[in-house]
Image 1 (cartoon, rainbow, N blue to C red):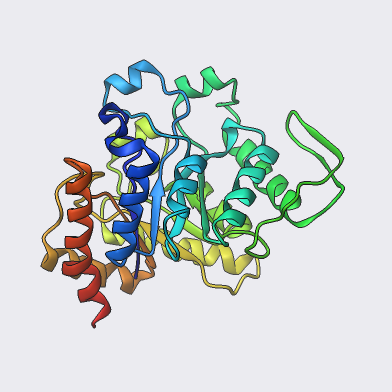
Image 2 (spheres, rainbow, N blue to C red):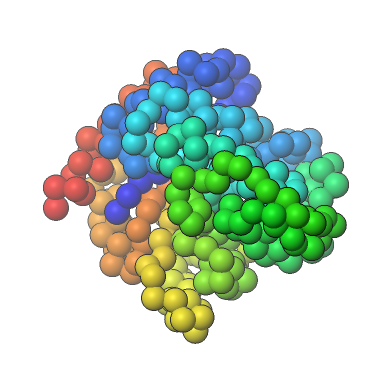
Length: 307
């Protein structure tokens, strides 16, 4: 099992405590030293006030934040969790991803999704109604941009008539792509385009608000993984697919879980095919965040790796 820790660059209300270059560097070093395999950040370029009042959050640009983390670490993978594909032209996204992969020495994990915030979609002029089709199109376009020169591609609202983007990513054929979302369409998108699936615990009420399917138990998740494997097999794929999950009973930035119960859950998740865990860590302050990372590394990560 591998672990990705949230870098709390969404805590913008605290000012430079969490969002300065020095802060990101310190937290990224702490996460790396604790044994985490990756650090992740979220994306919300222009959220609607109504969503913010209901508990939503701001965030730094993910590529800027992860570039800051890259410059102070050596092995920590840089995980976008997640980039909303329809928010921008796919060739612009492809350039940002390739640039981060190059400056970091090939450490990007590209977590992507279709998103669900209609207010943010409207502000950005993005196509909410067709976001799933736009997402599929973007994945094709980005792969073309990374792999080819003189690209000719007719997309949704744009056209490449012989265009080239260099440098290409260091990872070949491109950084691993993980698809967020619990729906069958998300799993189909993984089977067709990606190297991993990023589901998360959702009850039916929250699922209705976020336009995704509920996952309330390990059995629900196991059923989704079985379907994912079947969809991949139907397409002739035999490569292993990562499954990145947010553990049950945890929350972004909530208190650390009981180590015994958490390790027991990890064993059950691993048994059904989960390969990565994404974790929020308590962050009462920057120092408190770094202490949380060290404690989780000692009580959970080191313990699981001694098995």
